[in-house]
Image 1: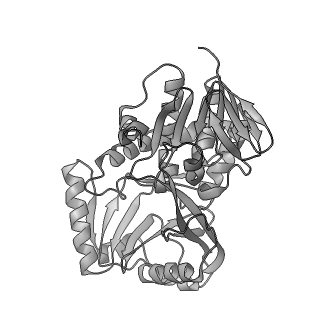
Image 2: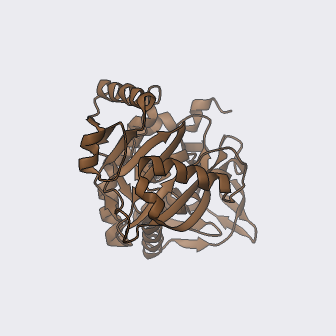
Image 3: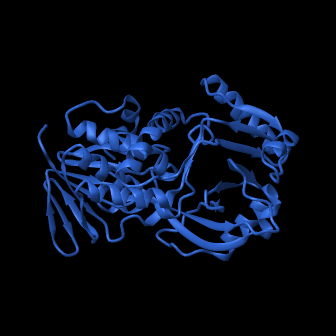
Length: 363
């Protein structure tokens, strides 16, 4: 196999995964990012839940997410050997209904997932409380196949693994990307192939990338002696029209998210966002009122014009790996593996084809 010089623009979970897997395949890789391992990936919840996220009309995104989910155990095992354990959780997801209207939506989701061959189990609120003490809901869906990961451990492991495989880090912003050359604020990086994985800022690096920032806020909390421990599973719900999720961590912390709204590149945390998250979470898990609030943070998801990311060649020697919206952590393995396959002259996973930038007709 011919060794190629690859420049990866962006050091979030997608960029780091692409850089690590590409270097492990024997290529010469440079990663360009002023703060690798930060950005939206640093404030993610860590859910790897394509089934719980599924909805009618989004079959291509579900198929791509499930293909990546199948790759996650091997991805995590290889990463643990190269850079550190990312704390992959196999406890599954609970999708909870808080009132009669929510229960109706759960029925729609359960029927849809049954039609596409995905196994879920509907349970009563009483049954849910025996499985997850402290979670208050009218009814719920149990999704046993979903996974979760500690996003911050994952990012630290990816950076360590990339370094171990010889990836060079350029701590700078990319200002222009073209065939054979990436310009930064302080110089130039020559390459055979450039990969745009700059998240919400990818749209400014190529005219065919219809990517915009979508702001999300998260809270991190910790149980006290007087409170119930966090749930074992990831718990998702919609409270008064607002989605909310609780993702437990091995260290006893609980990640609470996520608001979602258009705010340009504003990454400040609003008092309104904190209030809405806490109010929604308290309906779902009342004991959270007794938890210690240890962190508030905001990040910018890279939202595409539809529910799919952009994965594929934009022009000769320039590839896209961006626009993953809320599924960056989930789709990191399949995105990285697709690029490595392309680079080696092979075929990427079939599910990736739907995410090719050409689906928008070059617009």
